Image (tube, rainbow, N blue to C red):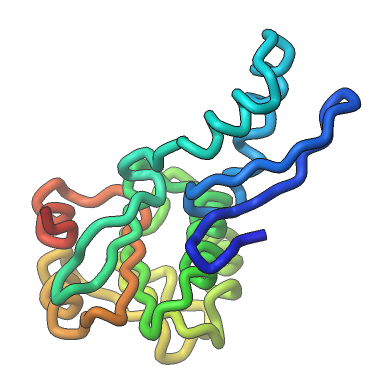
Length: 191
């Protein structure tokens, strides 16, 4: 469960031990990612208190749902390290949990999908349809799945960036999903 300050809590049961962990990592899926590490740590002799402390102090990896300042005071959720369908879906879930007034996803698509690209994009679009999420993309295939008014296709990163800068405010969350040029990233993620 997630509490208002963003901490995710989970009850752990492992080899007759029961304890609670809390992490500030973004994305509920990270609890599942932590579980094998917890088991290994406990198997190697760490105490539950040491494990709880270690999990509490985990830091988000840059480019893996890390948060940053964006244009016009917006917040950027940076998931540009790579992209997969499951990762994209987890990022969309994280966007919804963060509850911003306006949510914009930036993606160039997932070109590695090959033959599964069409069915995967349909799954992604079905996940955002009728939710307060706009998808900005350079991949026209996203526009074919009936998300009327929620998908905007741009002919370049420059055009996407121009639109983004004109529409963002402090109440905007921008998800950067997948690879973009370093120049584009530097224009979206402000230091």
